Image (cartoon, rainbow, N blue to C red; front, side):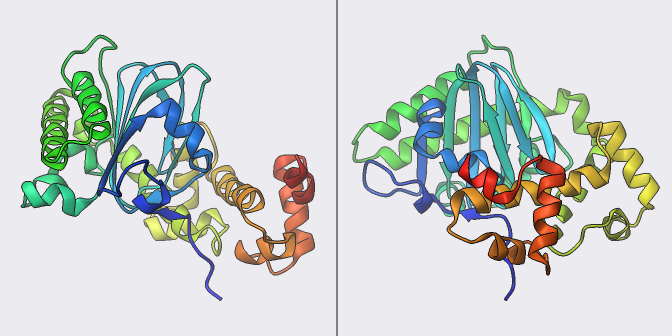
Length: 285
């Protein structure tokens, strides 16, 4: 049986208090409490915007971890794997929307050509905490989403379009828009790791897929992320093991099988080595 990849969540995974719509908006602090499973790596089949207004934390997108701070605005395209760790005082807005919902009013390639949805650019803008362009639009998106107007979809889509257009204006002036080759390779490694971590555990395996040497990949990871490529591989396996142990009814042997371990006892030793706990011990905690 082919093992599943990181969970890909649809909008239906986030029950809405009103009639189901192809878009969603909520305060981040409320969303995080209602859907705690988003703290572990997963992807979406829709687009996501995350706006931080207060607090701190981290947001990991395709292996790269970014610091959260007031004014941080993240843009994720379908299929990107991410998870976050939020401080207790973190506040903000989260927005989801389906591709077809946006293209219904704004057809063409514009959605796909926004710089923040291009892997050669970082998925985050670091704006001033006091900026007055995008935050008021995020507030309007939430107000509109919560209001039962007959033309809600059209107004929501218009505010969303303005958010994307205004955000895109910031990218030509960002140094990162010149596309760091090192960061591009790290993202490619992250995408490959999310795809193959169940079957490929060697640095040389990923180096071959990237057409670089294992030494080059290790040096790159050390320089950009301050971790070895091997450490990143093991972390990805362990995080997925923790997700399955926390959010599924699978036994330890079944979890081992899902992760590509032929020997459950070896999986137990592997898990203990990198977490300091047995799988059962982790599950009981």
